[in-house]
Length: 252
Ligand code: 13P
Image (cartoon, protein in one colour):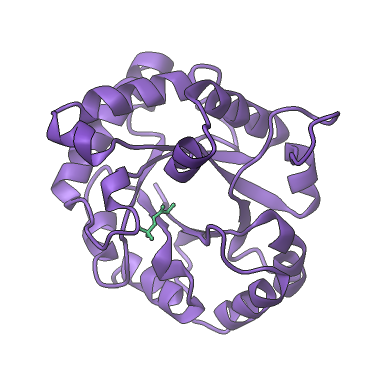
């Protein structure tokens, strides 16, 4: 299965800086045999698209979406609006949205389903807090999040879901989850996939890791069986650093 790397800029870079980032990144040497996406703020999609031109690498991604097609939903953005910018991937259920704006499992499920219907790949984020891990509840928490999110999602097709395991204690802390521990949680996620979608999908769905991934440690994840790539926050803010992450992800 092709590995995937997704840059998540979070709330960084308006249109001006986004355009400059994309132009700088396009000058970098990038591996061909990996899928690279950049998740940019809504307001920067147009500038990122313009700087990308017809280039398909990196693919353009969004960081959130609303599940309705259109209507009186002040402040929200629909899947079809994202399609107008050529967005092909969209993050849902990031822990920052769950914690800061109250996104629930139910909302994550609706967003993932709406994205797939529009042909956009949902990247469903799950992960436990430090307290939950310390109490031995990590697997239980993540299992419940994945079950709730994928119930109405399809495993097949060009917009097959990607699941991102992002332990909250590893995000932005410089304290990554050890690959062996991440693999254990990826196996838990794959067990849910097998239960909900059937055994044949267990190893067919991309499950990626996020949390303090950088150019020095990314290889440890991408060379671990069962980890299909990474979601990269801080180390994606500089285009040269993110290019280093991309090159390190697929060792020659
Ligand atoms: P960091 O890479 O900054 O830890 O962020 C991870 C993340 O939240 C990506 O979605």
